[in-house]
Image (cartoon, rainbow, N blue to C red):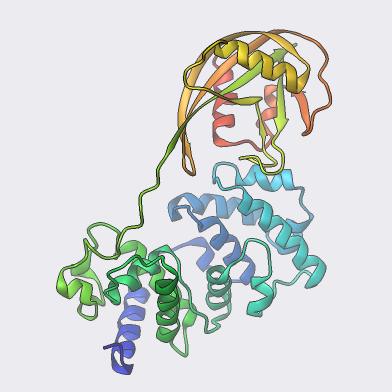
Length: 360
């Protein structure tokens, strides 16, 4: 079915549609490898509408690889604050330093060198080089997986090893000789704007007559859904320890959920305390880790959020009447004013707590 004529027809219709309907996005102006790289990393697991302002702020502050490499990681994380998945920012900062050290500050233009950079996989390397330099490289990400699965009438989980291999081969077979960058962007644009997970807009799809899933009316069945994530409930507590208008904060260490970001002392609680109350458990933990004792009150408020496979209820407690000396801890811990905290990179929940403190 997917013969030369079908593929030629598909390419022509898709590119014509893209020329007429592509969105005006900031990374589509001045398409350098550096700018496309920044956009692709930001767009991982993040919606386009959210990324736009972050991209503009980030590239204004770091217009080149060299300016990014020379920055302190804390400043990079601060500009990233709110985007989540902070490992992306740390890896991007590390990659910029490698580019300066090993590539004379110029973003590499061959696939293997790009693929070797931290945080860059096969899809991202192909996207950067095809979009910025029109290299003939395939892509495969969430939107195109869904699009290709429907074009191929794939009636099994597209994320299996065999199906991933088939999808990559299909993606490569579709590539045109020219305008590969536009073609790959058009695939992603079609997947995100028309070929939606639920209720795809088949009536306005430029390639609907080439899609057997549409012809057979199987849009609700394809792609086959992956098994649902089983979430685990967690109860956590953050302690706002006050001393002479300063608040105790700590930098999350390697392997922690928000590595390199600043946070309030935070601990996991059992859902139902047994011999000890939550307050007693928190005071014991605080003393053990910081050497400080305090009069604990709360919880003052709580918030709910989700991280990977966890659904977390976060309580905020207040610690006053501090005694003892802050001992040396495994990760940096310090006293800071609310003004100083405002300038530090924090997790979304940590930032929400900091801003709530102003009204308490």
